[in-house]
View 1 (tube, rainbow, N blue to C red):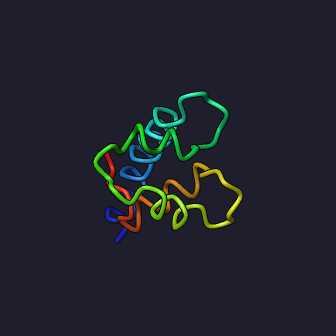
View 2 (cartoon, rainbow, N blue to C red; view 1 turned 90 degrees about the vertical axis):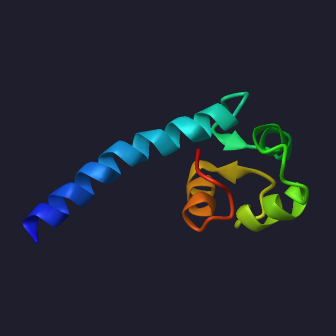
Amino acid sequence: MKKTLIAASIVMAIASPALADEATMIDANEDGNVTLDELQLAYPDITNIEQVFATIDVDADGLISKDELTAAQDSMILPKS
């Protein structure tokens, strides 16, 4: 059990910076949020990007936060790089 917890902790420690880096890569103007335009540039193959954006933008503020982006990737709304 201890080995499993340690392994899970290591995986999370490695994965968390990767997700943060991806959010930074998508956030072209580096303001800490992802706009619809930035999401379109990052995922040009998604045809219903406006609908996807609205689904991800849980608080409906017109921006996707890093937490919202991570949640979208975890729930497979968006692919992880």
